[in-house]
Length: 220
Image (cartoon, rainbow, N blue to C red; front, side, top):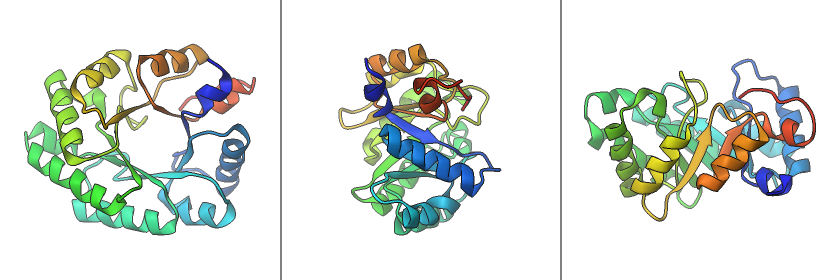
């Protein structure tokens, strides 16, 4: 697998709360140079990046990183992001609802966010490190039924990131129209290739460009 093929599946990511405009611009410049799938940036930078850059696919996050904001807030976040120029939304589910077995709330929220996104891509972050296997399976079903485009393993801010066992579990339980995004903890070229070969269509990471351009990797 070539570096170009790997980079085409990367959401080049910078979501630190201290992210500066200069750092965001450097991320965007790298994304254009190395033809990554998108840049994944904080919502406050969506409009400035959209104004500054043409032909750059902008991804941003909603309800990030904890997911327990009320649905109305997530809807407003998504609406503003799309109006600002985002082409992809990565939303975090309310894990509290999962722990209380309020699966119908999670399904309803995803459906509402997908209505806001329309033809734009909606990825659903389920934060696997906090879930049981049965909860992960149920969420595969919910994400499929709700019409989301991707199921995503992690925010990168939880206690653990993507693991191969979860990718295999997802493949068994998601619908044919749902793709998989892995995030968190993928730090080597071998990691990236292994997850892509396992069935991942996107990888969220800050390290891939530096890694594949020959510089030292920086953790996500």
